[in-house]
Image (cartoon, rainbow, N blue to C red; front, side, top):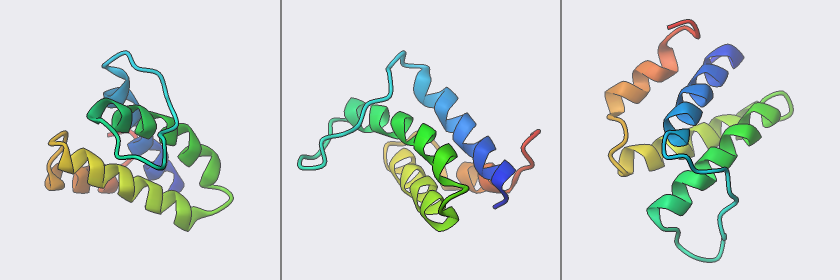
Length: 92
């Protein structure tokens, strides 16, 4: 994925995650999160991915993959939808 595609995917997920009206929040790394805590943590990750991309592309891509795994497991998007997110041009 290009930087523009990554940023487009992150913006798509930020918009989706923001619909609940929650604010970004760092999760407690020592306990399993509730669904809401996981979603707020991923909202926090959106900002991190944007900042991280220029410093460590591989880590930024792992974070996107982690988010997609959580979103799929929670039934937010299908695997085919996320594949399309990854391959669409930013203007799509």
